[in-house]
Image (cartoon, rainbow, N blue to C red; front, side, top):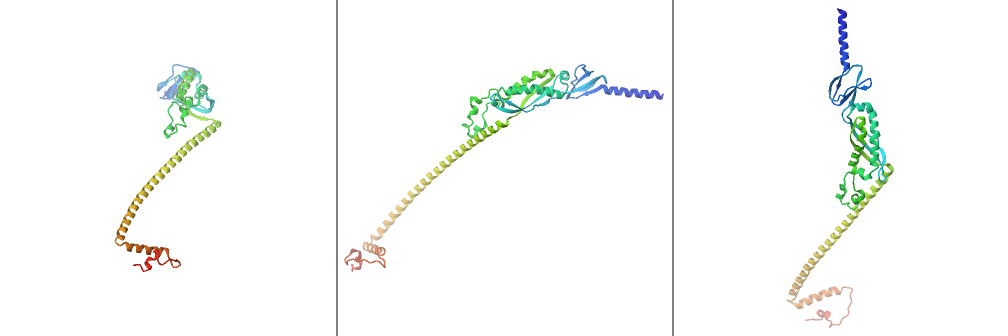
Length: 314
């Protein structure tokens, strides 16, 4: 009886172990391919849930079902106008056929290598087929610099030489269109490709910075010259207004002074008109005080008109 109980317990444990070894779970972000002796068996399990396989013979191979990231190595690429730039791209991809994926690349490291081999050349092909301005801009939208009055300096951006015919967005679409069919045989769907960063190489960057500095100096000089011209205009208007105010004030002052002098003359004339002889006498005394002092010497005849009031004038 005791040996039968032990055998029963061992049997139950063995069954549980077999059940545990045969069961596997697939969650929402995974998909599973079952292989038997290295060969794919059945259809891939892409729906989440609990599944079973033959224990120890069949193996569950898990692959991600959500979007995956590819980050390309930045590379030096010449544009159509022979400008060397550094281009850094990235992409989003996913596994849509796990059986093909398992049979061709089987793991993420190999998949990343395949993406490098396909997306990298497509990026170089498209970048080198267009001018630099096409990879930088997407539309012919006017630059914000027009808002600060620099139309004459950045006018070239609107010329035919810099007109956008394809644009950065269409270039990335072309890269996606070229690379996507080549990845289908690996069970991979390329969802999107974007340019993360574009930069000049070191030699070109220095010349570009020098040109940018020269353009900014030109803009600054334009503002300075306009400021000097505006300053001189304001100073000229100030001098004109000042002279106008001064001349007007001088005219008014002269008019007031003339009226005052006329009034004084009128008052003096009225006052001296009462006694003309007294007026002549006071004026003669004023001329004596101005013409003679203690050191003056003068010889005149007794009948001189100048000393008429000292000769017994009646």
